[in-house]
Image (cartoon, rainbow, N blue to C red; front, top):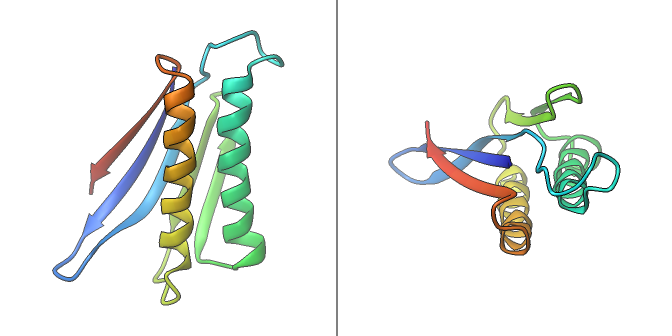
Amino acid sequence: MTTARFFEAHTDKRVYICSFVCLDHTGYAKQGADIACAAVSSAVMTVANLMTECFHLPVKVTADARTATVSIDLMGPDETGNAERLYRGLALQLREIEKQFPGYFHIEFLEV
């Protein structure tokens, strides 16, 4: 099962996502034919590319194909609010994938 974790920081004024990690293979089908894994990967990599290449946000993206892990970490302040918008958009898309593939994909929100 693939697990997506959004890490939320809490301040006096707001709650914001500061980090994201996606772990493991879904196991829906064999590698190369796993549409659940492809859907998750596509959504995650689209947001990672938007953050780094289009919006030039202060994020660090790490991917490890061997362990099927991708993380997107906010490394500094984002005064534009675009990182938060993109993280929340990713959460919306991943919730839809979670509905389509119950038992193969799960989302968690954790406080840091």
